[in-house]
Every structure is written in C-alpha cells, then in structure tokens.
Length: 104
Image (tube, rainbow, N blue to C red; front, side):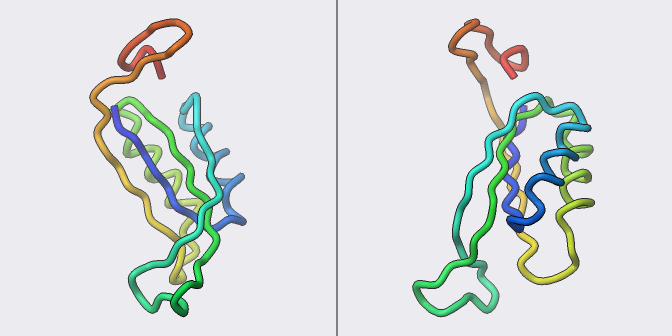
C-alpha cells in the first residue's frame, strides 16, 4: 500500500478529488494548510494557502493516481505543489477489524 499526500492549489481541490475518485480510490482526507516552497519563499512569516489531499491506495493504482493528480493540478506555473508517496506497512479499520488492503 502507498500513502499519497498531494499539496495543491486551493482552487483545484474538487477537480483533483474527482480525478482521484475516477481511478477508484474509496476514501480521502482533505486539509487546508499553509506553507512555503524552497524557491523564492515569501517574506518571513508569510505562507501560501494550499490544500492537502491524503489517500492510501493499493500499489497497482499508484501510477494511475499520480497521473490523474498531475493532469488536473499542473498549471505549468511555479507553486503548483508537490506529491509525496510513502509506503504503508499495514492498516486497520477500527470498526470491522479488517487489516491490510482490505481495510482501505
């Protein structure tokens, strides 16, 4: 399983969520965040508003989801965001007690 954390422009949140859902992702989390990139950051203490979309997916879906996110979220200008992918060793659905990929 892989955890995908996509940091994107706020105005693209709904379009990215729709694209992810079309690939077959069941659950997502969305957070409003603030931060600054490493290139030409704003003045000290100033941050840009972004959205973070988090989902955990089966390994075979990873490339399709990354392509879906980049197709929608890439405007070709600085500040489009980043996507981070990490490995998830296990997961547990608290209600059903299912573990692993059956829990997502």
